[in-house]
Length: 87
Image (cartoon, rainbow, N blue to C red; front, side):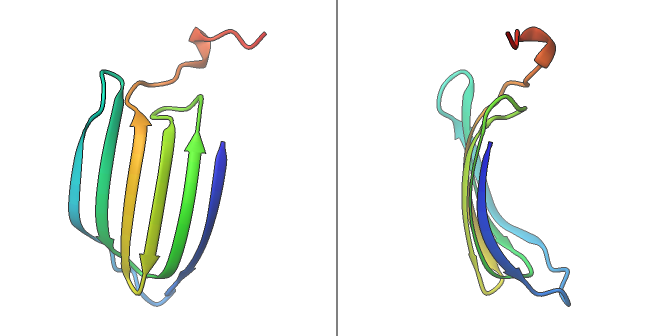
């Protein structure tokens, strides 16, 4: 798992509003999602990459002055540790 991010939020605000959201499939097991949000973010930049978790994949986001844009590409299957051998 890789999570990199830097954010500055306004602690006096609890604003959250989903302005736009669209999603789709790339293949049988891969999906994508794009969001535009109104939040309490003054500045935010993030990147994450996850494996061996539910909906594993990558996510990039950028936020400035109360607006965020986020793109996620992920595996739509659920991870079950019982189904995998850790040897």
